[in-house]
Image 1 (cartoon, rainbow, N blue to C red):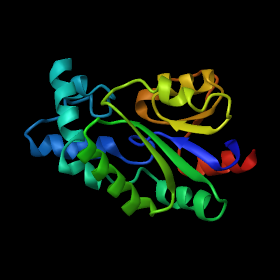
Image 2 (cartoon, helix red, strand yellow):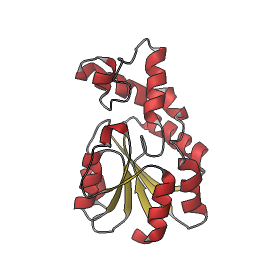
Image 3 (cartoon, rainbow, N blue to C red):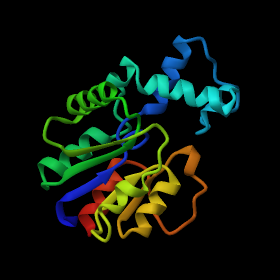
Image 4 (cartoon, helix red, strand yellow):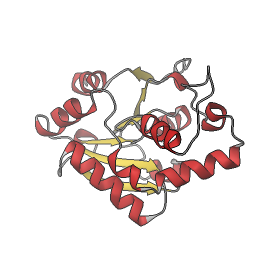
Length: 194
């Protein structure tokens, strides 16, 4: 399986969820706190309690806005190159929602951005859910695993995957064994060097 399958998270890796969520929050009257604009914890970013923050994230993830989340950085170019020029297919593993209609909107978004044949498999987990079980199904395959959340990247390493950590402000201080990448060009170059 390792040779031609790349496992990937979606938000903060393929798509710029943070930007879209910020736009949605602004339309609903919420303002980012000064100095917290790049904070990963939305409760801190907006000065909300954790329960309210989780509720708003779920509302966004299940809204029509999830259909039009833009690509992150240079994702389109290099995901397509890996797929079209080198034969890689992608398996998406995302903690977004269990709502099947929102999942369908996410699939439409990904197909519109990346094309109809890039993704071979979609694994949807509930909002904020751990990815341990989903990753365990790929145990010892040495598949590439592209993620931006440190805990999920480390879980991939534990089960025998080759994780790459997509750099963001929320993980910039990470100094563990997982290689950080700053763009999909970095992912592309790393994958092809192996």
